[in-house]
Length: 402
Image 1: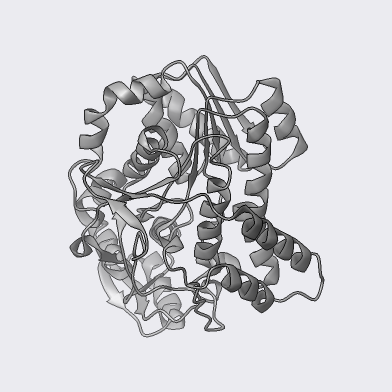
Image 2 (image 1 turned 120 degrees about the horizontal axis):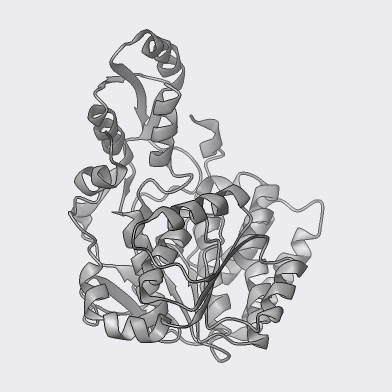
């Protein structure tokens, strides 16, 4: 029987156990002191990273856990997963709420509970494909930036002991709107660091996370559909378990305005086509390389007749916003590589210029209110704020591919 966790360990991360386990074990006392008997709010908790964060903190026995997500089905599966895991502690006060964190009902719930000791926000548009036109760009910016500020204003009423918001490796020298939005998000949360402690983490792709290309391999196989993957895009990967541990360690051990990142070596990078080939071979198939999506679709008909040759189309990347390499920090940032074994820390981040952040929000809000606004208008405003933002625009979106 195929075991996804074992496959990830063997072929993707190539680690028998979590690389962050050594730091979790070494800091158990401090983690317990930070989490035990505390009230915890996890926003976007039904997603891959949010749910992994929940599983990472539950062994330290928080007093209560409230999970908010717009994905009602995802919350139902999260609850079933938690309740079905042998030995996993789930507090009596556990409530999953299918709601938007920017909604009035969320504000009512937050105030009625008197706030929370720990707040972790995983709600985000995380895909580069979420910037195909002005409408998708506006939705991305609303979730990643504008509504994030609304949440921070609410938290300022009843400040938490710890606030964590997930970032991305793509925030370092961004080339796409998603990465730039996360870089701006870092400034937004740091602007509130005088009101309560704020931390974040930039990290690699989470192997087989919800909506990711590798997760699509599973869906394609179930439907006997062809697989498409880039052959020239190398990425760092962590397992779902590791993603939750990164966020927990950052949230609980980080100092105010610090950014954590995994200490991965370039040799640990993987290409998506290699993952796809290993995935299909593990299922007993021989990979049949095709020259186009159309040829692969035609060949896939033979799978339903019992063929063991699985059609794939591996090609170079030519879509907007794709970065040729990954990095976790810039040359201008100070980095501490001695504090933890498996994680580096970007330190010494100043409180951002609040007037500059406010001016950015005013410009974005004003331009998004206009019906005539274009994607290029938004990119221009973001580039003015982030001079190192070099948007890669090819006119092609990932949605044009399989």
